[in-house]
Image (cartoon, rainbow, N blue to C red; front, top):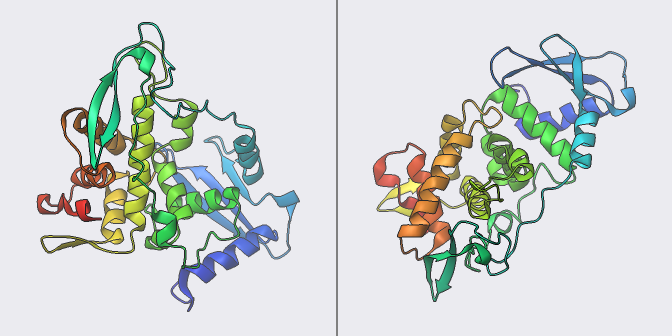
Length: 303
């Protein structure tokens, strides 16, 4: 990498071409530690297309358990989770379902409100909570441009395994950042196996909080402008550093505990606090959990 004048982007492009043309094979083997992998590269003198197989995943016995193609097939064939109700005023849980929290808005303020089981469990987010990540990067050439979802996932998993950290360049590529954070928070697993209430119903309240907190975290990690509060400047690099520090060296699900604590704070605040801007307030909660100095906790309220 140090000898590549164009640095990481061109290096990664060349590596992908070698894989796709059969000259480079990648072998993921478990290290024996929980959720950790070792990566070995095999550079061939003669191309071995192998019908598109270039990445192999092994178990502890050294047996191949998956390839890049079988993983893609599993993703393609996976049954999507049932769609969540879009409005808490549309009943989902009926009968004696528990009373749960949703939101209503009045002007520029958001309030926590109770509703009975027939009213549903959804969190209603204000219409102003727009995701600005794509807009902030629409003018930047992104590495993921032209890549399939499978290619993005394979690249992100490989880079997280090798570097044990989210690379800073992901900040200029929201698709790569989204894929990385979804991997760290077990997004796919949770969407297929949603949170349940004590009565066995899908907990829409917590599922919506899960998705919204992750959306805010991705925005924070891709923000092109520094946030400023009382002279404290926070950049996307600070956010990525915080993610890396809290994600157990970027292992799969390594950020789950951090996110669970943030969701608890979020849901508690929604029930007991009058919130003027739920998106900015959520970013503040995320930042307060990141472990940075206390004087910078409220920086993201100005984002």
